[in-house]
Image (cartoon, rainbow, N blue to C red; front, side):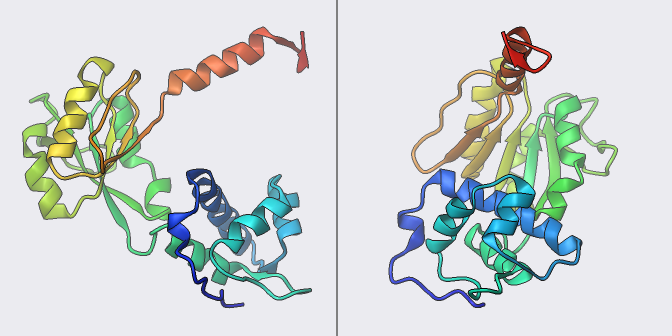
Length: 223
């Protein structure tokens, strides 16, 4: 059940939508492993997690040939290989910038370490918060120490949880500190220079979508 190598370099061709689905597959496989499942077919994965079996096979085909016909995929083996594809081998250390309610909730969320992302530092400019810790024990530093702490702790990803009016300034500081991967929770639009990967999570957009659903359905039926 070991994947056979491809001649082409998959990362040169695979879309971000595909890698997003790989992340979903890893979590599905983790649930199967926790339930004691050792082998599984694409059809079984699709049926249990409401996915598309043909899409699963197509996505996996970018990275090798998996499984045995009539037997299925090794749950542990496939999960390990997909984690490697996604760069999830060693734990990735994360900084959270903004030590308000959202920032501290992100820093203390137990699901991140389980998935290989370890928040090791919070940053803020409020003197009353600097030198304290989140409830989960993540230390809070002055934002001016960001470059030093990033180097010392080997931080690779920044999560931005600040008000919209300072988001661009904070993103600029993160980029200047050498961080090349940023997850922005601040509403509005921020920009980054070439070579920096930015993902935006505007919670209000999702809430708007839910509000639209509520406004245009009655008891689950479209008006």
